[in-house]
Amino acid sequence: MSGRVRKGAPALVVAALSVVVVASIASAKPAAEPASEAGAAQQRTLNIYGYGPGDDVAQTRTAHNQRVVGPNVEIENPRGGFNTQAFLAMLASGSVPDVMWVSRGLIGSLAARGALQPLTSCIRKERVNLKQYRGAALREVTYKNRVYALPAFTNQITIVVNDDVARQSGVNPNRFNTTSWRKLRQWNKKMLRVEGGRVTRIGFDPKIPEFFPLWVKWFGAELISRDGLKAKLNSRQAIAALSYTYSLIQDHGGWDRFKAFRDTHNWFGRNNPIVADQIGATPFESFIYNVLANNSPNEELTARFFTNRRGGPITLFAGNGWAIPRGAKDPDLACKWMKADTSVEAWVAAARNRLNLRRRQGEAFTGLYTANKRADVKVFEDIYQPLGKRQFDDAVKLLVRAADFGFALPPSPGSDEFRQAYIDAVNRVLTGRQSPRQALNQAQREAQAAINRNRR
Image (tube, rainbow, N blue to C red; front, side, top):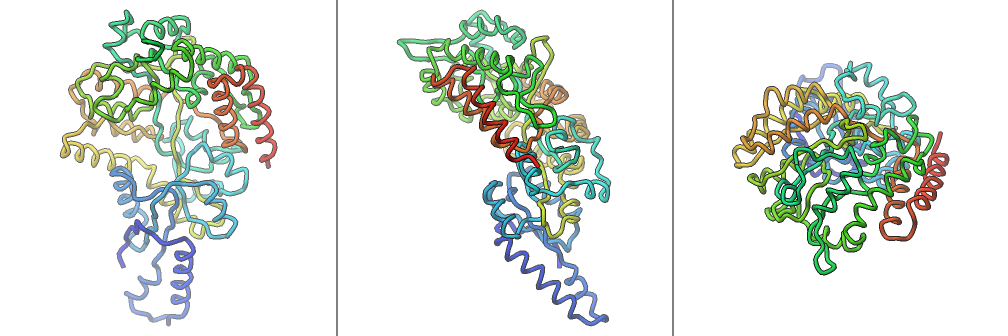
């Protein structure tokens, strides 16, 4: 029986029952069974959670993985993303998937709860080369010195500068940076526009609360200790970072006016904020350049590093990874899948297929950015081809380099609650309910309590 991917898979319980039935049949067969029946007895099922059929990149990697795990493996890959509460319910019921696609930001919390299997045995048996992964992404899934997931994408952050707005405002887009907060605020005031009490152009959007860790890193500081056990949300650096980024928004007349205008932006349309001159500059994840290259290929923009106070590039990593839950019925098969999916070969196949697909569709391809540094080298040396558009070709070069300066928040036993604590704190400041110090003092208490509560 040849292997196949079942995209609309039934519940995990059904899959588990299928395994039991197959095993029962196998045990009842005589020793001299026909070859065809022996092949059927070896049929295995890999239950995946949180991945789904996905886009062309996911589908190409899935086809590659199917070839690696073999033709006698049936892939159960239902639609839908990872949901923490749904997964914990599966765990409590004893019916869990074999492997799951999960945000790396959740790894610490899940590992601390004993919900995940450490990959020590997997890495040894399958000879997974950890040196191929980017250090920051690998540290993001390493809890108490044990690796609990294999990382996939990176999605690094750089600054998108609207050349027209910058030049009209007397700002040189090629010199735009975040090194000097004094200059950055001056540029923000020059580029923003308020008419009749309404914001009609954002100067610089600092993207808080989502990029708050990046602003704290500007000092070289962290929001949490390296071992993930001590929150540092109310450090002087964190308070200064929140105070400063809040001031950039206040320059527009306050959060309500700023947000009301920003909510009208459609970054995924042809009349996006760059085309409409609705923004001067903002940090953004790597995918935005592909979106803009498709929707507004002739619009002038400049990609710049997000820099720390010494002028050095920094970027914040985020993304998913593959993990094996405690109680998985076939962890060996899951390990083989994970290794295949994050391999150089899988990423190269996905990049080549996407390039060819985009060509047929008449669309742009600005590369794939992964946690496998060796794969990135192959993709950008052997597959990627410049678009012939200065702004996007330069952006790709910058993104490739930016990955070398990535960091991520360390995993913590209270990772999800820790993140929510600082998000809530920033929102309380934005809406005028608390000062930065008050908000972060409260967040510190909440985050540390969550870490202590979940610590094992």
